[in-house]
Length: 628
Image (cartoon, rainbow, N blue to C red; front, side, top):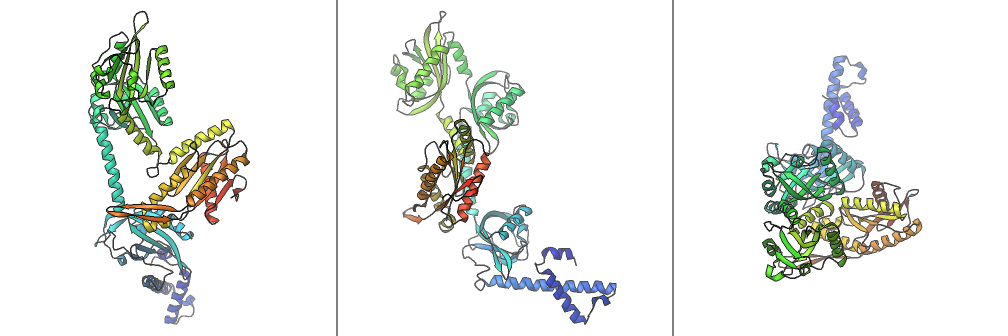
C-alpha cells in the first residue's frame, strides 16, 4: 500500500485514524507491545494497519456523503437549488456530491461524478484551478467563476466542452471546510454571443470585401495577414501571394530602417494618414493614400488604401495647365475669380449636380455649413502661399445629404506665375471614415455603456499627469464599485443588469465636466478622472469630496429599469443600488498611472469594508483617510 498516496488524499485527522487502526488490530491480535514483532511480522502488521485505515477512510467518506445527500437535514452544508446544479468538494477538490440542473444541456447522473476530482474535467490548468480553490477556502466571501469542463459519456470518455457560470463559496461542518460550486449552464448565452460576434464580423468582412478601396491587416512588423480583393487588383498580385509578404516589399522608396521607424510611429500614436508609392507585380508604380489604425489588443495594424495614381497624374498635368477628366475622382475647375467653368462625370455622380446646375456659380453652393469662416480662411491662405491645399472637408449634395470628402485644391498658373484657374479633385470618404470610427470604437470604448475603456482611460490619465506637471494643478481619480449589483443580476438576469450599468454610466457623466473622463473599468466598476483642480491640495481635496458626494447621491437614487417585451406591456423593475468610492488626489508624477489606480482601488475597498455606500480618500502618508 502506497503511504505517500494516503498522505495526499487522507483527511486532516489522518494521525487519529492511524492510531484507531492500530488499536483495533492490537485488540484483535491481543498484542500489547509492537516491539515483540519480528521483521516479517512487522511488515504484515503494517499492511493490516493500512487495510484497517482504508476502511476507516471509506466509512468517513460515506458518512460525509450521506450528510451531504440528505439536503434539508443539513442546510448549513448545502442547499440544493431547483434551477441550478452544483458540485460539492472537499479540501482537495474531490467531488463528494454533484447534481446537474434539469435545463442543463449536460445529460449526466450527478452521482457518477463522486470520488472524482473536479480538476480532471475542468478545461483549465490544474495549478490555476487549485490556486482558485485555495482562495475560496481562505475567504469568507462568495466568488464567481466561469469555467468549461469536458462532458463524459457512458464509457467515461471525454467529449464536448460545456461552459458553466459558477457561484463558489466555502462552508463549514463539524469544524471541516468544504467548497460548494452552484453552477448554471450558460451554453445558450455563449452561443448567442458567438453568433452575434460572428454576424458582425461577417458584415464587416462583406463591406470590406466589396469596398472599392484597398484594405489589409498586418502584424506589428508589417507582415500581411489579410488582404481584400480591391488591393489585390490594385497591386497586381493575388490575395494568396500577398498574404505572408511584408508590406515593405511593396514600398518603392523606404529602406528597412525608415520603414520600421514609420511602423513605430503608427504604433506610438495609434494611427496615421499619409501618401506613399507601391510597386505592382508587373513593376509599375502606383501612388496610394493610406489611412492606418493600430489595435493594441491584437497587436495588428488595420489599413485602408486608396489608389491616387490618376489623381497625382492629374495634379501634375494641371500644373502645366492641362487637366484630365479621366479619373474616378470628382474634378471641379473654376476661373481665377472662383466661378465654376467645368466639372466631370464623377462630380455629378458624387454631388448630384450637373454642369448646367453649377456653371458660373461659386463652389460655396456645395458648403455644408459645418466648417466655420476660419477654416476657409486658412485654406485660401495656404492655397495662395503654397499653390495647393489638401485635407478633409464636409460638403452637401444636391438632395441635402452631407458627406465627407478628401480634396486636393491646386492653383494653375501661367508662365508669368499668374493664377489662371483653380482645380479641385476630391473623393467621397464617408463610408471609409465610418469603418475607421467603428474600429476606433472597438479599440477605445466599452460596447455596452459607450464609455472610454481601460486603454483610453490610461491615455487620458497620462495626458492629465503631463498637464499637471506643466500647470502645477492637482487632479483626482475616483474608483467606484456598485453595491448590491450582483443580486439584481442573479434575480432578473444580465439584461436588467446591463440596463442598470447603462443608467449608472449616464448619471456619472451628468456629475462631471465635459473635460473630465468617466470610464468603465470592468464589470460594475467605474473610474472617474477629474483634471485641472487647484494648485492647493486642500482646495483640490475639498472639490473632490463635493464631486464624490454628488456621484454617491446620484447613483443611490432608485433605478426604474424597463424590460420591453414583444406583444406584451413593458415590465418595470425598481432597484436600489449604492456605491463605494475610493479617491486619490495627485499632482505631477508622484506615482505611476498604475499606482494611482491602485491607490484609488485600495481606498474603495476600505469603503466597502467599512459598511459600503461610503467615500474614502487615499493619502500617501496615512494610506487611507476617513475624510468622508
